[in-house]
Each structure stands twice: as C-alpha cells, then as structure tokens.
Image (cartoon, one colour):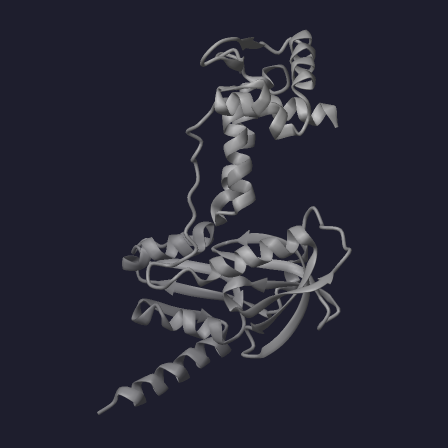
Length: 300
C-alpha cells in the first residue's frame, strides 16, 4: 500500500538521515520517478522532506522534525516507549526492533526505567527460558506441553492453551486452559519442566482480568496465626506486608492465609526458632513433629 510506503520512507529518512532516490527506489522496488512523486506528496502533506543535488546530496527530512507530534503527546510517546521497554524484559528480538524504531521516530532515547532478572541470588534464571517460550506460544496461539510439579507433590504432564503470563506476589505464572483438567489453571513458571511448543494451534480469547480465578491455583489454603521474634522484622514485613501487628515487646503477630501443604511446614521451619505457630493446633502439631524428626537426624 502507498500509505505504508510513505510511512516507511519517513522512518528510513529519520533513521539514516539521508538517502538517494535510487537507494529508496531499490529499497521499495519502485522507479526513481515514483520516489520523487512520493516526495512531492509528502511535502504537500506538510512533511518537511527535501532533496539536495550534487555530491553528498540526497533526500532528507528536516532535522527538528518529529513524526508523531501531530498524533501523540509527549506523555503518550514516553508511555508507549516505557511499556515496550517493560515488555523487553525477556530480550525479545521483535520488541527490541520495535522499541528501537519508535525511539528513533519519537527522538527519545533514555527510557530504560525497568530491569528484571529472573534468577535469584543463588541460582540461575531457569524461568527465563520458560518465559520466552511461553511468550512465543501465546503470540502464535500454539498449544504447549510440559511436566508440572504441583504443590501436592505430583508430577503430571499437562497440555495447555497458554493465554497469559501474570506476575503475582513474587512469582510468575502461566494462565491457560488445561486440556488435562478440562479447565482454566495457573501454573508457576519455576515448576514447569520439559516445556515444548507444539504445532497445534488454538482459538480462545484472552481474558481481561483473571485474578478473580485465584481459587484455581490448585492448592488448599488455611488461616494461620504466627508470632515472630522482633529480630525478624525485616523479613516479616517483606513477606507479609500489611498483615503484621507489632506487640509492645517488639514481637510481630501475623494472621494470614497460606497453602495447606508441605510448603507451609517448610516455610515455617525456615524461620528456625524465631517463629511460633499460635493457631491452628493441627499446624502447630505438624511443625512440632517435623522439628523432632530433624532433631533426631542430627542427634549424636
């Protein structure tokens, strides 16, 4: 389409500074005469494009011209670039190219407002590979298959229509339709192994809001009350935020809802002797029993 050629021509001239008519003609696979006609049309539309003759000459756009000033405000331009930079956290080739092009068109450069590292301080960023594969599968509407390690200790092969990548609390999740369960499910990226993108495509709309489906995180929960030593305040506030009540002696009382499985016991034990389970009694008993077993393993 002519309109697309006009836009591409403007972008090329903004990026390269100047090109000759034969170079543009070769690029668009049209005649030099057509290029000059395009320049006349652009000039008539108010685009400050001009041609200079002689050695070193060529077709250029006025240096202070910014394409989108008549379309987008300064704030809108910055917001677009910031959004793209946010998507670029996984170093996607197409996003990097688009970001570079729009930065050139908008004449804005320093919009690197966000940096995310998928790895922890102690291990490699294995989740990044899953993120990139799933991103590609979502964009191409491809069904994926993988082994999933659930909170119940099960390892089951899942076949899923990937719909959305979501960040909840401190972790990334895949949200999609699981044909194994015949329902929508959340899958924690770090528990996904042997991820494969199949050649099968799916047709299913992507939901706007999905956290109303939180009950489908595939885990039973329980309300617990925990008492932490004041020396753990930095970690308590990192983990529980506004669920914390500070006692007069500096100790911290937390009432929260947590997964009712092995993860809960392991998490409580990770605090060592700096936490006490106040309720419920059955969780208190489980932690006590596990602590006794640990003691037996180390008793000499």
